[in-house]
Figure (spheres, rainbow, N blue to C red):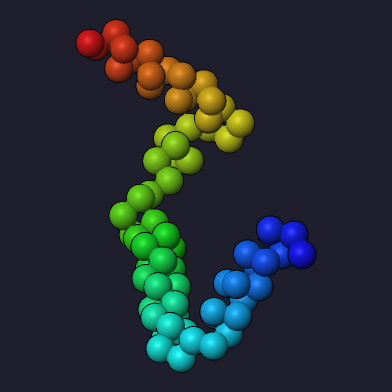
Length: 72
């Protein structure tokens, strides 16, 4: 049996026989959902989409970078 197949079955058998681990993985999945979806919606607005015209996003970012380089 190849190394990858043996490694796969090692993890497959381990996850299949877990009891408490399934609950812990569910908690981890919920935390990741909160971090990446909920926090993104409320704390990271679409700044470029609000301030740049459609199709001109790259020019907006380049202009902002140039302004910051010139200020320093």
